[in-house]
Every structure is written in structure tokens, then in C-alpha cells.
Image (cartoon, rainbow, N blue to C red; front, side, top):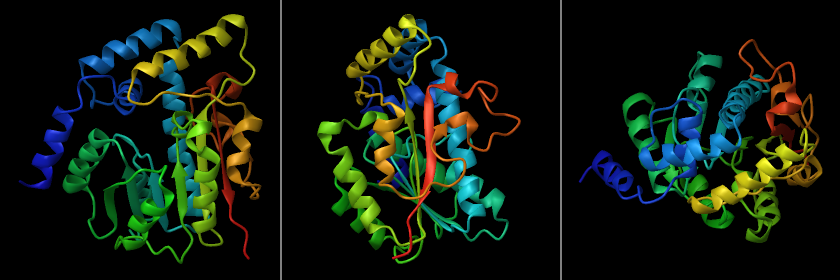
Length: 282
């Protein structure tokens, strides 16, 4: 059986409950989702009408962050919890920014459906010498980094942009979120960049929004990925005190906005925070 057939079988076996990756894909206008995901997504939208815009904000942040990393000299990306491929994947953005086609990208995810779709996309559109998708659990840093090290697309001795975009709100503190980030920070070469974003419950507009965000967390308990929201101080610790690239840790729409940025005129309404930090030289 070939890789595509195995990928399709993995997808078919994942339809008994909503997948957070597929729900996210639905909210940002992708086409990799199923009835179970759409039903759940519309339940969430009924309670939190702007959830689609929040997800679009996360995806747009990924694109702008990837461009900033390339402009900062990064030529290698490791995207953890990369999710389902849709418009604006890291390797596509990097190749737009670098016509030299010299940027290498490794996608890693432990959700079979996400990995399956990534394999299909990369088989059809990517350069196998520079772009790969692998199965790995980010909560097992030793094993995951072994996979990165053993890949033939990433040189761990050189600076890497490590991305966890719209992922950390699915990692609970009691699952070892702090130890996990510390392990990855330790393994990155000096000069590497750490790209992080997640949804926040910082400063809700009113009691109604505060309760809606709390309800969102409850809803996601029925999916493959229960959620947790964090304030800026709770989230900032994941950067390990590394110096931040401008403009620092901000609401995502305030990070190098462009003409397409959702919430550009009111970043704090986006419910998404993010930033990039650089590992200092030893």
C-alpha cells in the first residue's frame, strides 16, 4: 500500500468525533473537514460569533511570522502541531519570500488525520528534498527531536525557526507545557527563533464575553483536543526570557500587519496573542 492510500485510510478512521485541526480548517475557509466537524464548529460559532475571525487571525499571524523569520536570515523551519494544510503553508510562504528556493521545512504532528493530509499535499506540491511531514508527539521532546535530527531536511546545528502556532491552547499546564518548551529551547542552536501564538482570555470586553470564552473551553472537551486559554503573563513564560523581536509579545494583528490583517484596527479584539523570540548566543 502506498503513502497516499495509507493517508486516506487514516482519514477515514478519524471521523467519530470532531477534530480540532479540521474544525480550525473549517473556520479559516479550508475544505478538509467533515459533517462531525462542521456541526461542532457551528455550535461554537453560535456561542462565540467571531471564532472564525480568531482562527483567521492565527493563520495570518503564521504567514507574517514566517516571512519575518526568513527576512531575519532563517533558512530552516520546524512546524510543531502543524495541523491541516491549507492556503499559506510555511513552505509556500518561505518560497515566495526566497525565490532561491533554499528554505527547508519539516512539519510534525501526532494527529493521524493532519499528518495524512500533509503527506498528500506534499506529495503533490512540495520539493521532497526540502519539505517533509513526519509523525511525532510534541509532548515527547526527546523522541521528536531525534526525528528532526535524523531527517534529511533539517540541520539541527544551524539556526531554526521553531513554530508552535495556535497549538499551545491545546497543551495543558499539567501535561508538562513548561518542561516541553524548555526542552525545545535547550535543543535549538543559538540564533534560532521561537514562534509562538495561542488564544487568550485576557481582558474580555464584558462578562458575556468572559463566559463565552469559558464555554469555548468546555465545548472543546468533546473534541480530540481539549483547550486552555492563557493571559499574556501566563503565555510569556514559554519564551524562556529570550529577547523578543519587534514588536514583542502582542495581540497577533499588531505583529507586522498588512492590508489583509483581520482586526488590524483593534488588535485586542482578536483573542489571539503571539510573538517571536531569538535564542541568544552562548
